[in-house]
Length: 277
Ligand SMILES: NC(=O)c1ccc[n+]([C@@H]2O[C@H](COP(=O)([O-])OP(=O)(O)OC[C@H]3O[C@@H](n4cnc5c(N)ncnc54)[C@H](OP(=O)(O)O)[C@@H]3O)[C@@H](O)[C@H]2O)c1
Image 1: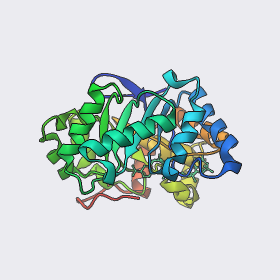
Image 2: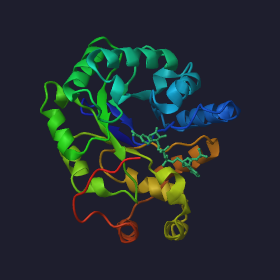
Image 3: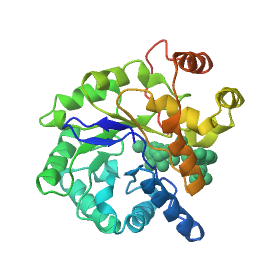
C-alpha cells in the first residue's frame, strides 16, 4: 500500500474507504460489510465516516465491519458543525465512539465550517486528544484562506489534514489549497474521487483508460494517488468494485498519461471558490 505521511510522522494508507450512504438499507448491509472487510484485506485500512452519514447508521455499520480488527484500521469520523462547540464536540465524539464500538478515533474532522468559532472547536479537539479519545484532528471543506486563519489560532497548527472535494473534474484546489498544504507537509484527503460515479460515465476518460489497459475508476484514482500528500477515499458497497479500486495502485503514471489527463481535464488557470458536495 502506498502511504502518506501525517505531520507527526505516522504513515497512513493513500487509498482508503468512504462510507457515505452506507448502512442505510438493511438489505444491503451484509454486502456493504463484506465490501469494507475486503478493503481491509487489500490494505485500504483508512475508513472515513461521519456522524452525519445516515444520522449514525454509517458509523454503526463501520463498527460492525471492523469488529475484531480495530487495530488494523485508521478510523476517521466527523463532527457536524452545529455540534462543534467546546462541549458539543466532546459529546458528539463520545456518541460516535459508542456507535463505532471503539475507545478512540484516529482522526476527527470538523465536517464543514459552521456557527461555532474555529477556536472553540480546536479547544474541544485538543481536549479530546489529551483524553485519548482521538489521536489526530483535522477539518473538511476549508479553503486556503480559512486554513491560514486556522493555523494562526492557538493550537490551530496542530491540524492534521483538510478533507475536500478533489477529482479530475474538480481541480480548483491545485491553484492554491493543495500547494499550500503540500508546503506545510499536511496531507489532503480527496473526497468524491470518482465524482460520485459520474466520472465513470465519461467517454473520453473511458477511451484513455482502455488505451492503457486499466478501468476508468482505476485511472481516476491513479490521477489522485500520483500527487504528493493526497489520500483518496472512494466509497463502494460492492467488494468487486473495492477490488477494482485497489487496482489503481498498480497503474503506472507516465509523463505521457499525465499530459493526456491534463488535456482532457485541464488544471485551473485562476483561483476560485472551493467546490463542495
Ligand atoms: N467531507 C465531506 O464533506 C465529504 C463529502 C462527500 C464525501 N465524503 C467522503 O468521501 C467518500 C467518497 O465520496 P462519495 O461517496 O461522495 O463519492 P465517490 O467515492 O466518488 O463515488 C461513490 C460512487 O461511485 C461508485 N463506485 C465506486 N467505485 C466504483 C467502481 N470501481 N465501479 C463502479 N462504481 C463505483 C459507488 O457505487 P457502489 O457503491 O455501487 O460501488 C458510489 O455510487 C464518501 O463516501 C465520504 O466518506 C466526504
